[in-house]
View 1 (tube, rainbow, N blue to C red):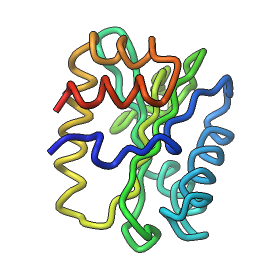
View 2 (cartoon, helix red, strand yellow):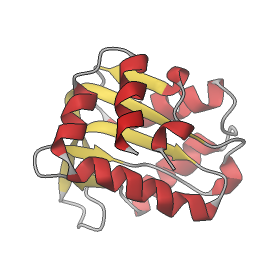
View 3 (cartoon, rainbow, N blue to C red):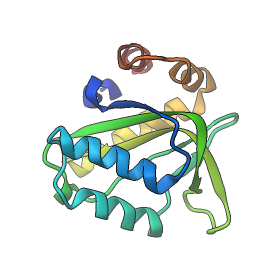
View 4 (cartoon, rainbow, N blue to C red):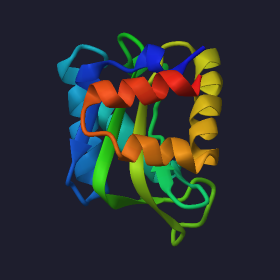
Length: 153
């Protein structure tokens, strides 16, 4: 399976936002606008992020992987946001003072729980290979991002 199966052009964003809350709103709003999630998705993402932070740090770059329960999803998708300047997310599994400067956020909206682990493993592959992340960060269009993602599978 390739991660690009869940990524559509309309769900690939480039942003200059600097606050996590604004990022979560932008991305969950994009998923809602395009019919991938229910109205409840945004509040569920925000609530889950407070309890189970999703920031992950690679060797050179950080990412975040916000996600929530399948009951808030209409059809599976991944919204990707690439930032001009990294956005601070709390570290997954860390204490509340540990943060990650996320350059890319992958917001998951999955319908099948068993697919979540598979997708998380693919994203871990991206995180473990800085050249993948650098390639994504150098993209200027959604088509370029999709091309990079197709090479990762």
